[in-house]
Length: 122
Image 1 (cartoon, rainbow, N blue to C red):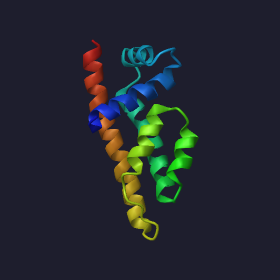
Image 2 (cartoon, one colour):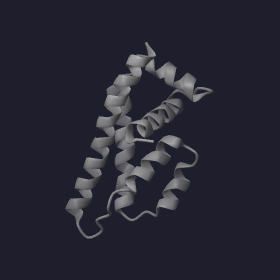
Image 3 (tube, one colour):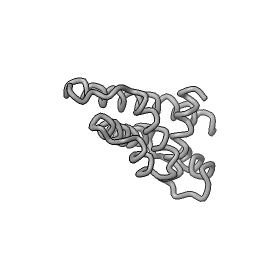
């Protein structure tokens, strides 16, 4: 599964949480047809990705983080992606830069995917 496809799974899973729908498909359609902006959705995902990467950079064990997110596919995927990046325990500047780049890349990909998903829903 490529990064774009993985992000789509993340987004739809996250959308399901926000909509409290019975199924992921219902949630995705409900949110994509709503007036909730792509920016709002992706900013929320950015903030959560930032927190996950901060914990990763601070040395949180991957297993603990996966346990904390439970069965939430969206956050599970973000944790998995975060652990593909190096940890910088001795370099505060690189830690901050890694957190910022990671969260920004997730947000940028989110915006692109949201646009595609909204076009495909109509």
